Image 1 (tube, rainbow over the protein chains, first blue to last red):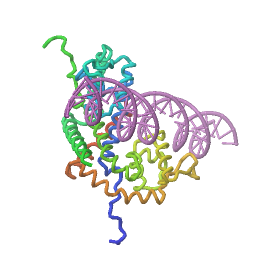
Image 2 (cartoon, rainbow over the protein chains, first blue to last red; image 1 turned 180 degrees about the horizontal axis):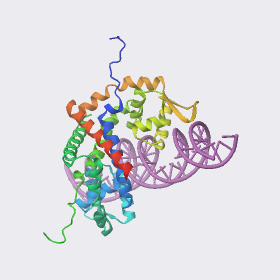
Image 3 (spheres, chains in turn brown, yellow, orange, purple; image 1 turned 90 degrees about the vertical axis):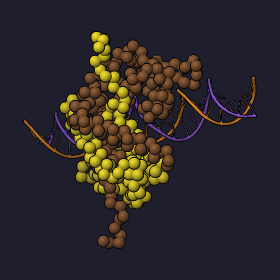
Image 4 (cartoon, rainbow over the protein chains, first blue to last red; image 1 turned 180 degrees about the vertical axis):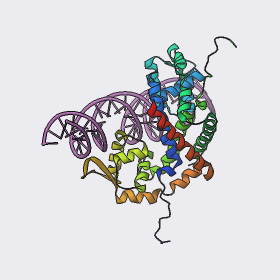
Length: 153
Length: 153
DNA sequence: GACGATTTAATCGTGAACGATTTAATATGG
DNA sequence: CCATATTAAATCGTTCACGATTAAATCGTC
């Protein structure tokens, strides 16, 4: 072996687990986009709606905890959802620091319009339900590990 | 069962494989950010550099194919890398439509500065190498399936 | 009860990311 | 050849996404 051989193996994109996740996130976005367009939602807006359908009347901070997003991302997004009439935003009288986000009738009714999405997405994955469940669990675990690691460094 | 029970099972964020991938992509970004800051790169800029370290002298289109990004995303990003002195951008004399992207010495030398990253990231995943390899393959397959599905719809 | 510390959203600047459109260059068919 | 079609990158407008900072409200401690 020549002494000047590089110590690193020249990793390519396909060797990086982070790139696989990054590019698959974009691929999901592309599948969702035409479906969500009919509802007038973007993909992150849809995720906020999912969080609110599960639990209405949440604070911005609580939504951020669930979505792993900062208020600097959520505030403008929530203002757009408010502008569309899907949610209301109002200061909590009991603690004026917090802003409570609530579904309107329009926001609630979107849930029915979107309940076919899960099936569309599952079929688009091209994986069996069993594979998807296993993958989801592994990826969620990975996310938890990364969060722990980000705190240390 | 009451007749007004909703047909859908009220899926939450944690039920969505897309959200697992989406949020894990952000989590990777947060782990990479402080490491890449030392190199003066953002995460997408780093991925472009990885692609160029693997194969120098690529067109914008070729980089887009590998990274699954549009020219509208790459052009400004490449201009920033050019501004930092890591790459050059020049029209191909043989086909003036194409822009050829090439590493400078500075861009090449970044590879040595970044070859410890893969190890950092692997340890941050908290998974065994075996698990990471398996996950990477599954996610890449998922990405391929989503791409196929996006074409049909 | 007042003052400093903490918490909560919002604001601002930078950098992705996309679709639609535009511009320029090359390929193709008659 | 020349008109048309196709290709490649760039541009523009909108929407995320983050860190750093700010402003306002609440908490804690004395």
